[in-house]
Length: 270
Image 1 (tube, rainbow, N blue to C red):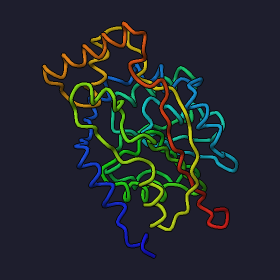
Image 2: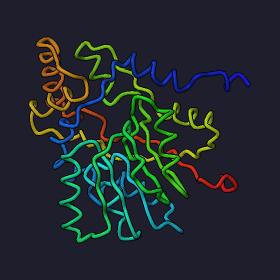
Image 3: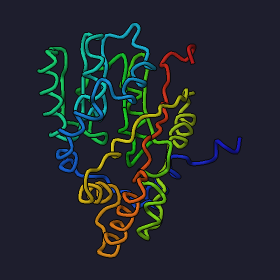
């Protein structure tokens, strides 16, 4: 078949390069750990509520949370499991996750500093592996193979639906070429070529970057996603902010959709 001749893993990497996507250093995430523990890791966060509701924990005793952040998924399902392992390359995230685990009186959580690209050989095989909002990696094929090998029963991953983390209208307003990131379709096709027939579902969650009480915070958020802004871009962004504030319009979309791409390790169940 023609589709089998398409190098989806290569196309994914080409799209990352076109988008000029560079991986943020762990220190960048260290600074956001506290805030994310209040927003994204909140047990009542709509995205998290939907994700956990769609996860099948039956028959599972252990879980690996890849890119666990402040314990977003792992800590919120730990009460239903014998052991949870969380890995992240941000030490700040792990420290906040450890503090939250202690506050929740969880004694079955193990946290390790580890990146997607590093060896996982010392990690135990877990019944379930999950990578929530942590799959925009340099080598998608390698990452999907890795998380597949890490699970005994089931794997859950979430990927962006939109091709940009920043509203297209905002990027155009400041004169930036719209950055198109690879979305979930690449993951589905990469998995297909690995012989994995994944299921796809969708989660509509709130945009964690949706609330700004000042232009400074708004500018900081945009710079986080797009990189340093020139003086001209900052002026355009200020005008965009001022205009939307005066008209009572939202600065960014209030929601962000995610694709849940998941599969059962038992081929007969797929």
